[in-house]
Length: 163
Image (cartoon, rainbow, N blue to C red; front, side):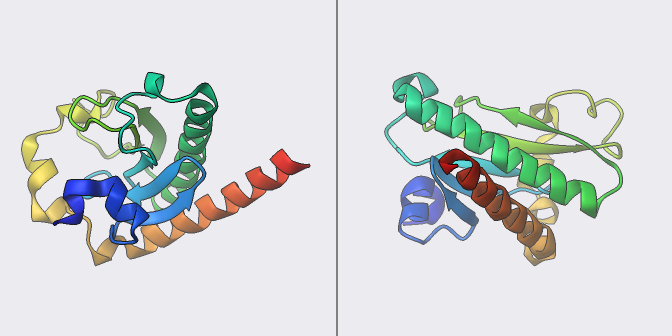
């Protein structure tokens, strides 16, 4: 079975090559596509939860807090890597994949003017499928920076929670 057919299960088994880190509510992964460099996803740990509303409140709150940590890590890494970094968008949709996940989209000033202030879902299909925008070794430095930032933020957050 291809790891893409079971992203959460493959992450839990150590077989998902996009995993950056396991955090309390899920798995932080770098996106398969990188037309907006630094795109990441937080995969919830429960593959049977198809919506936030199906999760116990404590788990929902943890998931949202972890999405914030991942978004902050992406923002820090992307801001350092590209002076044209603008902001981060967080999307929790669930329309295509029926498991809880949050998209973390870095946004840049160099995006096409007609799209820079619009949802990323309006980008043409070729951006999502082209080998030129696929995750590859050229993203290793950004991937490492996001992971380092995330682990540092998660450690700091854990210390504050237990104080």
